[in-house]
Length: 252
Ligand code: 6PG
Figure 1 (cartoon, helix red, strand yellow):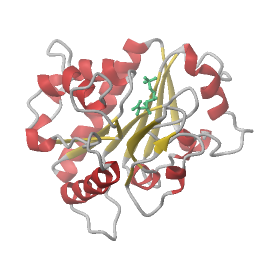
Figure 2 (cartoon, protein in one colour; figure 1 turned 90 degrees about the vertical axis):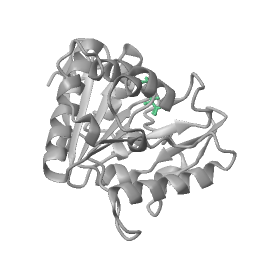
Figure 3 (cartoon, rainbow, N blue to C red; figure 1 turned 60 degrees about the vertical axis):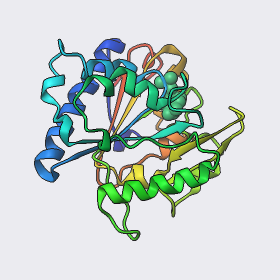
């Protein structure tokens, strides 16, 4: 992992959110300047909440600097719940950010994971990704940024240890059953993450320290954890972690 990624340790979750917001702003400006749009897949869970709130905070230096009209929002994964369910990643991003910034509704691409046919929703989402990012079936769409978290078991998005979804190479979106959660999820798959221009992991909290040490252990078998399997082919890979999560890492 070490040879492919940039790891930054930030003092606390607020410092992590500020660093992540700076990266978001930098990558957005670069993408809009060169491609006229910024396509970002948002991470779910709780860690990104502060980042989304900071980006949309009018008193912070980011809101007026992000080209919101040119941003297309996707999600890295979604729970199979209605969009107004407290567990919804879409709802969290809407509450913390999307309802407070001038983003065009047609540029918010929700995963319809609440549909009874989750596999159909996954296939439709893949079509949406290809349509918006304007690539044919034969190519993999290139996200400008994929935001990801890491679970204490090393999962990322909804790619969990042992999941068959980790082996998918011919589909960009899947709807795996997650036994540990006793629930189905809809998730982007490794090919689209590996095609991204930038992947930024956001990891915070002491509960992640043991896993982060294992993930960054150079002697560990590569790919033991799903998060290690995200390897952008020609893109940036940045890990932003807070000091508690980094507390067991070897000094760098
Ligand atoms: C989800 C996320 C998931 C999350 C990790 C970390 O839908 O839950 O996509 O992969 O990023 O579980 O979650 P926390 O940020 O809450 O620790």
